[in-house]
Length: 194
Image (cartoon, rainbow, N blue to C red; front, side, top):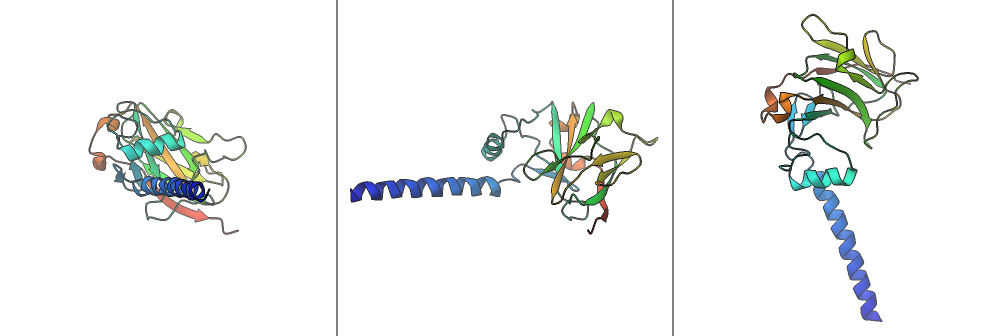
């Protein structure tokens, strides 16, 4: 009987430590293959057969579908252009150009991977075809809890969030040098202190 208890304890310990070490390995390898442009980062091989095993395991764990090479690329920003974490109770100005793409979307996600709830009656994303642009094709958008004129992405709540800029049908998805791309700036404007 003692042997069976030791065997069960050993198996439980091995499974527990194995699961814990796998989780730590996935967290530690989160930036593997990721390229950064200002506050934006993307993994150009995510969703392809060339993706590293850690990326494949992370995608399998969270269950998100990714775009394949040639379909598009997803850029994520969890910090503004000065390196401060994005907060739902702050307003941000997103301005500049995006790489050429047939269509792009901008959405805010919580750290749990779910879309941040927008204000009442507002969509939870912006789409390139509905954006007001300047003559040079640049744009400015406000991301925050308070209504703003022009392009506004409404976010509500408290805590940190991630902005995701997804480019569809773009040459950027098949390029290996993402560092040369022109991406929009993301500047914090004000925070609600209440």
